[in-house]
Image (cartoon, rainbow, N blue to C red; front, side, top):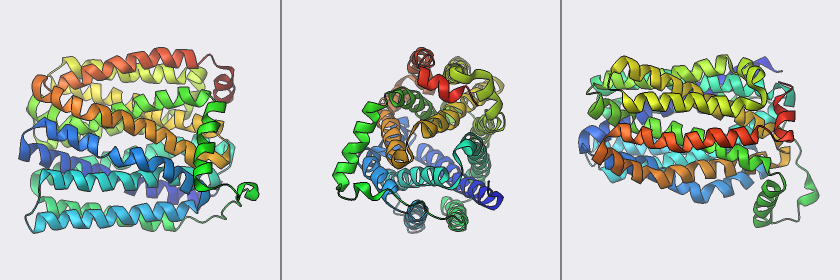
Length: 401
C-alpha cells in the first residue's frame, strides 16, 4: 500500500471536510439567527439535495467513464467558485435566504460529484483487501476534519464577520484540491468491450446491475438511514442549540464537534467493530444511532445532549464508513461510480422529502420533535438490518474482516 498516496488521500479528506463543516456551521447559524425561522433551515437542508436527484445518475456514469481524479478536482474548483460568489453577496450586502439556499444547491451538487469520484478513485488506487482499512481511515480523517471545521466555525460565528469566516473556508477547499492533485497512480484501463454502449445504455446497465445484485438494495436502505440521520442532525443542530438548549454559537460548535468526535472514534475502532459484529454490523450500528436520537429527543440538559450527539455520530459513522466499504467490496469495479451515485440518489431523496417536513415540525413543536421522528425509521432500519444480516452474500463479505 502506497503510504504517500494514503497520506495525501487522508489530507484531502480532512481539508475538504474541514471546509464543508465550517461552511455548514457558519451558514446554518447565520441563516437561523437572521430569519429566526426553522422553516428556512428545513428548506436549506432539503433544497441543497434537489439537484442531486437529477445529477447523481449522470455523475455515476461519468465517474465510470472518466478519469476519477480529474472529476474530483473539477468538483473542488466548482465549490471554490461558488463560495467566492457567496462571499461577494455579503461584501456587497445583497444577501438573502434564497441566495444562500441557491448557493448551497450548487455546493451540494459539486459534493455529489466529488464524493463518488474520490470513493471510486480509492477503489482504483488501493488493493481490494485494503479497502476496509482505507475506508475506515478515510472516515476517521473525514470526521476529524468535521470536528476541526465545526469547532473553528463555531468560534468564528461568534467573533468574525461572515465574509471573513467564509474566506477561511475557501482556503481549506483550495488546500483539498491541491492535495488531491498530488495523488499519484496509473489509471486502470477500462474494459472497451462496451464501447458501443451509449451514455444512456450505461445508465440503464447500472439499474440492471442493482436488480441482479439485490443485496445492494439492503445496503442502500441502511446507508440511506445513516445519511438521513447525519444530514438532518447537522441541519437542525443550530435550531436545537439556539431554541431548545438556549445556548450560544460556541456551544453549537462544541456540539457539532462532539458529533464529529463520535465519528473519529468510529474510524479508530472501525476494524475492531467490524470483526466484533461481522454480519450484525448494520444492526448494532443503527442501535447506537437510535439510542442517541432517543437521548436528544427527551433531554434539555446540555451535558446529556452531548452524550446523545456523541452516540449519533458514532452510530452513523459506523453505518456510513463500514457499510459503504461492504458495498464497494460487493460491487464489480466497472460499476463503482454508478453504484456510489445510486446510493447517494437514495440518500439525497430522503433528505429532500423530509427536510421541509422537519422544518415545519421544528417551527411548530421544537427541534426535539425532529429527532423523535427520526427515531421511527431508524428503529425500522434495525429490523431491516437484522434481515439483511442473514443473507449468505452479506455474511461472506463481512465474516473475513
